[in-house]
Length: 230
Image (cartoon, rainbow, N blue to C red; front, side, top):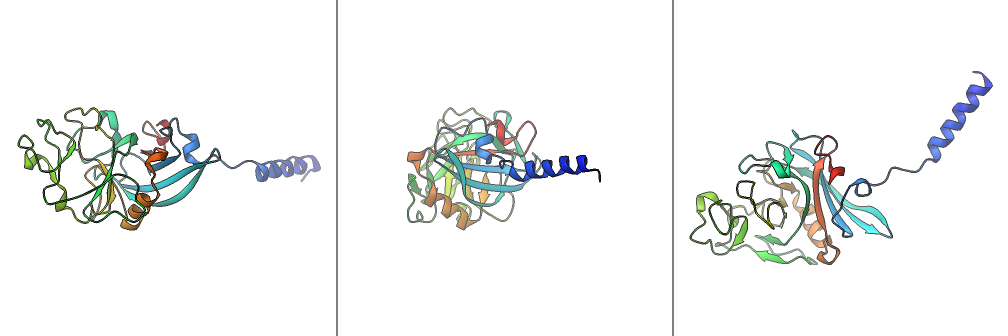
């Protein structure tokens, strides 16, 4: 090898070894919700039904990973949240708040989110014709059909612990979808929610602090639904 070439290659190697590491995922995102806590749920592409959930803390201006777990998504993959249709078993992508938590089991010790206990009369209304569309109801109102809604106590495994995802929640659009949660794994892919193992869900609830405005970002590693867009 000629001395000049060897010198150039050696310099390049030193530059590579000394280069700064890539910023953590939240630092590459367009928006993280303005708080100092963030949960990311990332799939390889919109056809995927599995991926990774990671929770992050912003400390001294730097995002740092606090924990992660394997995740499951809708049985029909993921779709841009603003284009989602109800009943498609797709997980909406986007950046969402986390209004409150609930569960068929007691809140894990240290939980700071508002945590609602599921009772036999607790329902999530998914009836597009109801005034309670995409809302927790206890009991179920007369204008919310049971066949178009979820009785939460019927899912003791998945809803042992859950966080409500602010998808189509603040200003519901009829037909876009209702009842999107971050919850405990069931037997397989979800009907549109994001799910994680039960111990991960408990850890997230112990970690999440409403005073630090935690948000959930759902997306893919690239393409039109790339998580860095949100």
